[in-house]
Image (cartoon, rainbow, N blue to C red; front, side):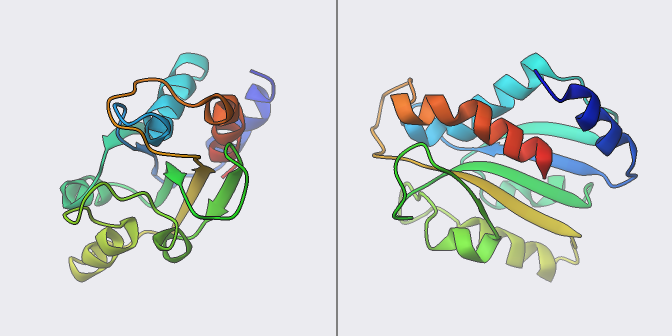
Length: 163
């Protein structure tokens, strides 16, 4: 992928421990964009020891212990209701994503709520940014991403690397 040298120089310039996390359910069509991006990044890049990539599935409070080990969090996830065309890649803060986050049931936790719980447990991140991809619809029991969301995978990966 183009820009690999620039990316490597940027990562080597920091001692921050960085987690790039793909969130989403891979059996719900476009909702699987986060794990799909993690696959793509792992296939095309080698990461230094201070950067970890993780398929977090549908997240929740189970990621709290993982967050203890990192300074910065970059989340790749689906977004809905943004008013943008499907496949549009957007950057969010956790609070901004809360309004557009894809939830699967009444039992799901929003990322902003997980981060609030982290703060209560004295887990402090220097930064958290979400790379969200606007989805058209969430379809259960579909393994493929929709065409516009699949086309957004390289853009979302590049946005995650840029962050």
